[in-house]
Amino acid sequence: MLTIDQVRSEKIPAVREVDILVVGGGTAGAVAGIAAARQGLKTLVVEQLGFLGGTQTGALVTPMMPNQIDEIPLNSGIDREINDRLIAKMESGVWKDGNRGWFNPEMLKLELERMNVEAGAELLYYSFFEDVIMKGSSVQGIIVTNKAGRQVLLAKQTIDCTGDADVALQAGVPCESGDPNTKLNQPFSVRFHLGNVDLKRFGEFLRSLGRHDVMESAEGTDVTLLHTAMVWGKGWTLEPLFRKAVEEGILNESDGNYFQAFSMAGRPGEVAFNCPRISTGIDGTDPFHLTKAQIKGRAITQRYVDFCRKYLPGFEDAYLVFTAPMVGVRESRRIRGEYYLTVDDVLGAKKFPDAICRNNYPLDIHRDKDDDALKIVKLPKGEYHEVPYRCLVPLKAENLLVAGRCLSASFEAQSSVRIQTNCRAMGEAAAVAAAMAIRKGITPRDVDGIELRRELVKRGASL
Ligand SMILES: Cc1cc2nc3c(=O)[nH]c(=O)nc-3n(C[C@H](O)[C@H](O)[C@H](O)COP(=O)(O)OP(=O)(O)OC[C@H]3O[C@@H](n4cnc5c(N)ncnc54)[C@H](O)[C@@H]3O)c2cc1C
Image (cartoon, rainbow, N blue to C red; front, side, top):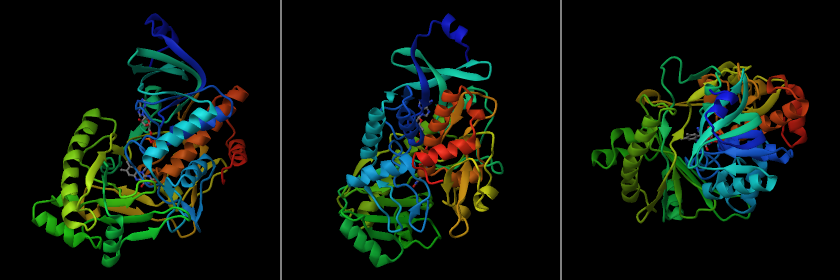
């Protein structure tokens, strides 16, 4: 944490002064950038990688999980607009239950970039958030490290969309991480894609086995959407093949703790894998852990490649397209904000006057242990809960908002709310709130959540 005077005395060049600074151009941040710039405010999105989308595009996390009732998505706004744009280009598919986010990550990168640029946001890639600049408890901007050295970016309002609450932590916001009972974080996954897959044959094979999803795509799109998985002891029809592969030494026993595969729109002949899963004492804010996971993930991927080629019809000539350049981190630091969302709020379908998004995705906790490798707890049928604006307003720091998976929520509540449609909705809400604060000359803590909700509805949110 530095003051402006310290920054001046260290002669760190101030290269931008903006209205809204979005730190992290991922799932929430890319949307925050669009929403902020559309309000005519000078907006800068800072991202450590060379593209937008974060976990969606860098960690290859496709598809978006369903969050809807009677086939109607619970969130709308820019989230819907992005999906519509990709569906129109046949770069996203629609599930049989109406979920609209079965997307091609490469085209999502492009679309997010286009939407930011069209809206007038400036993007700054290859720049890593290093420290925060404070005046008392008020965030004045940040310092980034990049090829040019250290640079100062000043802003009236800052939105922390790093997924790990990096800015909030440096600004003195109390944070927590992991399951308070086990002290463990949810496992990482290092995802990969296989190409040259005969999806028709693979689909027929899955149909012949029984438990899977094979469906036709949205009207006008010519893709078959496939989904299958295997977790030891959960009744998946691929289990005998996994057992045989373990006996033959092609897979390790732990490779069957979690295996999941999806096809996607816009990438014919390609399958995306939601594995390998890397657990045991990992922390998404420890660069050594992230490095180990990337190395271990690539090694395990080779075993899955051999398994798929040998055991799964349609994969005989498959090749590894790529492994994700970014480790998939399900949960790390979470802020403590004006409201702390709990598991009772989620499962009790709690509503709030200052709601900024709606969710009915279940609690979804991945674990290490074989006897409870995946805990899914659904909300009562037809119910949803809301996330209040106050979950984005951190304690102890002014002129700062936080959006995305690091919102103010308990470990269990976060396991449900962390899905992509909600992160996008949080990004949009944070940007609209930041703009209201600028217009009124107040701090985000004093933004009226009910007025914010009305403003979001005007902008297309279904709240
Ligand atoms: C393995 C896995 C599977 C999942 N499966 C699904 C699924 O099927 N469907 C679904 O809807 N959700 C799923 N999720 C959840 C969902 O994808 C994430 O919770 C969500 O994408 C997180 O969004 P975010 O904006 O909080 O973070 P991110 O999208 O990760 O964005 C953070 C951004 O900040 C950047 N950044 C971080 N630190 C810095 C820094 N210091 N300086 C500069 N830039 C920085 C990052 O590069 C990144 O671009 C899954 C998550 C994982 C990990």
